[in-house]
Length: 432
Image 1 (cartoon, rainbow, N blue to C red):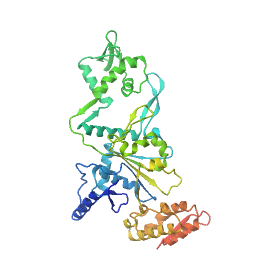
Image 2 (image 1 turned 30 degrees about the horizontal axis):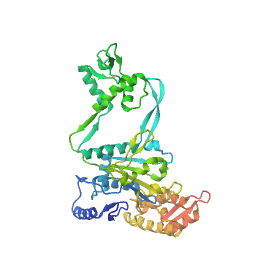
Image 3 (image 1 turned 135 degrees about the vertical axis):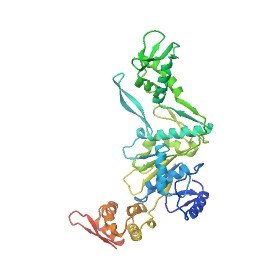
């Protein structure tokens, strides 16, 4: 974002100057009473960066923070607490306005955008391939539909194949439906009362079963183009596609959509995004000055709408993973999330401060600090267990298994640990 920004105690939370002042005023008022429920803005146009990455050491609340950030992007900044926003977050995920995915080393373009998968065709008893839409493709299309609908003050609702078939069945039971083949010959859709099934026939001759699975493939554009498919199924599929489109008369409010990509640097980003890297920039999106479209591997034209936001998280301590290349890095805004000891109980707070200082004293960069999430809600009696099960193993990774170095770091933090002489396993005896 180009405007002035402020941060509250949560390091990921970025808002404009005006929104910051408004939220501070609301906080002062809210101290007199609790907010009974989450209350999003009725009209809000997001001014956040389209592409954001929350990065920092492990345990700093990056994934946790994506929930609040996603809701603020969609509904506007508010003084609602995390629990209230989580309820709203779950609601928007069900409605398809928020999606969440975790990258891994084997994640690919075909998983993320679009690809093909094998399928056995029961009609021809042969192997065929059908289009597979990835999570990025799906939410992009949903946000594009909303964006285009907002430009004309309405929206096109697409009914499912099953819905239009059900409507077609009702109509056909009243009377035959006459169509025309591409060659101009009459084609009729009819109903067999005995079979209780949809049929089709030419102007003369017997009626034939209408295979719904074959018809669906024609409807979706994935069918092998046999003679029957081209001549009879395609005209029926054309009719269904027209019936599926319904113009809504109510105005379509422009909404923001959010795709959260956890552990974004665990995949090969260039491979996953492919040609879509170019579309991520604000001025390359639909309706922008330099609007661009690309051709997907499926041959389909694709553009990225301006109301789709990407939020990624990146663990800076994992140096075994590929870093983002410059082409991708310059298209994201990076927000550093640091350890925040002030969120902890008094004893844990002091221990974390000393521990991170000790790590820096060993000439480790800030990427290798320890986050506050490991200690959230823990009192003094629970700290030895936290160190034994979570923190000490992480420190052993940081310092390449050098037991004495780890013991030294822990000692500076007031944590006394003893190493097993055979296995080098560290056990914490007490925490000062």
